[in-house]
Image (cartoon, rainbow, N blue to C red; front, side, top):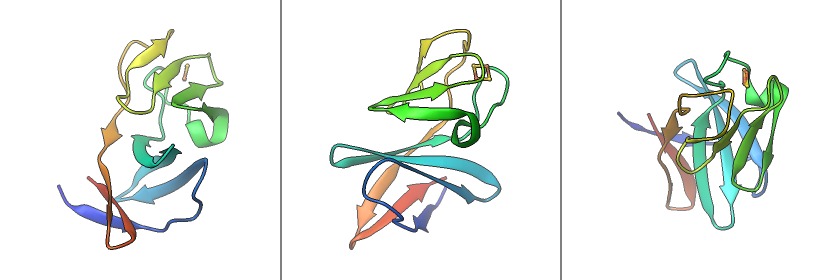
Length: 99
Ligand code: FES
């Protein structure tokens, strides 16, 4: 595991990026940042292509699953498995994701 500096493209909404061939969604929620893998656990749809963020919820528009962006837990099925989450920190004004 290592911290990777990421571009702070926006201070609101979600940003998609790739680190070590893993697609991520970086989401700002109030003053905190969260990162989830940009891949639905149900049938691998990409949230950045076929999804949306609503507050702290990642919604997959392929079949309607919803996930908590903070924990990756399933909020609405048909997905059963959590999605991967990654720690995010601010260090010296830079944003870093751990993976
Ligand atoms: S791929 Fe996301 S709900 Fe089916």
